[in-house]
Each structure stands twice: as C-alpha cells, then as structure tokens.
Image (cartoon, rainbow, N blue to C red; front, side, top):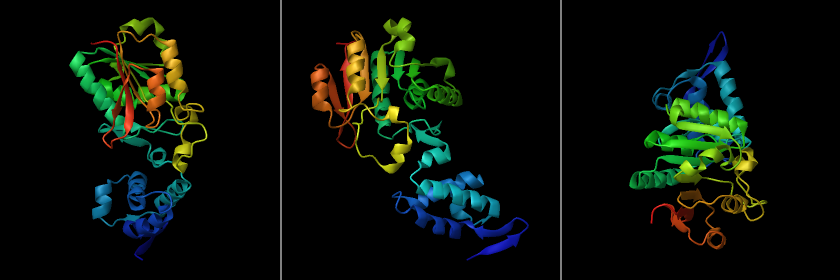
Length: 282
C-alpha cells in the first residue's frame, strides 16, 4: 500500500483507495469501480480521466469524505443524489433528494417529441410532472418552442428552474406548481403538444433499493398504475392536440380500452414504452 504522512494525517494513493472501496459496492451496483471513480471525481474535484491516468495522493480529510459517500451509496442511496447531477440528452441536470432522477429510456420520448415538433411546426409544449425539468428543458433546448411545465412539488419547480437557467432556456421554460395542466388552464387552447413521464408503477410493485429513495408521488400510479392516465383523459379534451406519454410495457391493453385512438410505440429495446395520440394533424 502506498501512503505518506503529512500534517493532516496519512495520505493514500487514489488507485489503492478506489480498488478497496469498489468491493463495498459489489452488492449494490453492476459497476462498482465506475461508481467509486465518479464519487472520487466529485470529492477531489478532479476529472475522472485524470484519476485514471494519475495515481495521485488523497488528503486524509478527502479520504474520509470519500469513504462516507461510498458507504452511503452502499445503503442503496442513489448515486446521482450523491453526485448531484444526471446526464440526459447530453446535458447535465442538477438533481437532489426529492427529485425524480431522469432515466435513459425517457430520452427516446424527447427524441420522438423533437421529431414531431419539427414535422408539424409545434410551437407550445406542455410538460406534466416536470421533476428536474429533463423533458421540458431538453425540448426547449433543442427546439424553438415555449414549454409550459407543471409539478405538484415545490422543490421540483425550483430545481427545474435551476436547470432551465443552467441550459439558458429559462425565458422559454415556464413552470408552475400544480397538478396536471391546472396551473395553465387559461393557456390550454394554445398548447399544441402534451408530454409526460407520469407515475405508472403499480402500488406494491417490487423496485430496486435505490429507486425507493426517490419521491413516491413520481413513481406510483395506484393499484393498476393507471391513475394518472385515467384522470388526465377524464379531465381534458385533447381535440386538436398531440399527446405523448411514457407508459409501463404491460399497460398497453388497459390503455387501449381507455384511449382507443392511441398508438403505442416501442423503445429501442423492443418494449412498449410510449402512448401517442395525435388529434391535431390528420
């Protein structure tokens, strides 16, 4: 083991430390070495590429901090809450406890939305349950549209504003606290497209340990997971609009009964993932 003494205590080389700490995460993640590397990069303020190429000494106080965060991760606490960010659509989104962490598969929803926006010259997009703002901010970043976003969480409103500011789209990303599209009732007729990755997990479903640290209101959609869809389509007449939402792969048959005109699209892994209802352009 390579170490040296200084005024703050014993310093160890980062490669030895990462190798030791990776063992701690073997039962938590399929990529323990990578996760320790990412946490170490955050703690030390050093790019991960530099940590891999330079076997630097780690000050004792930084080692303590690194160990604490790795042990926290070992409890199942989400990696991205520790890192304070999650990449989505090539953009870095700030996330913290209480905010739903954007998923890679949701990038495909955004890509579909961008194609539709371009094809039909969509001008105003709604984003229900914006969370970190991943969907709405990404759409505003990559398309010249106005986004009207909502969330029932005040923390989500503030975090999504922060991300809109980070990516310089705050002037075209308007977010308000409230359920569904109620905060923008007066602008409902102006909306061309409605996007959402709503809560659709069935109550009682077994989920990975780290997912259980995320806000339950962003995950669970009632006994059958369909509460959001039932209430949305009961509440709003979407004639003249395009609706694109993420769904559970086993919910297609139930949703066909609820929304007979909808089209159901598969993601890149071949699983049904999206509900598309186009009542605007036929």
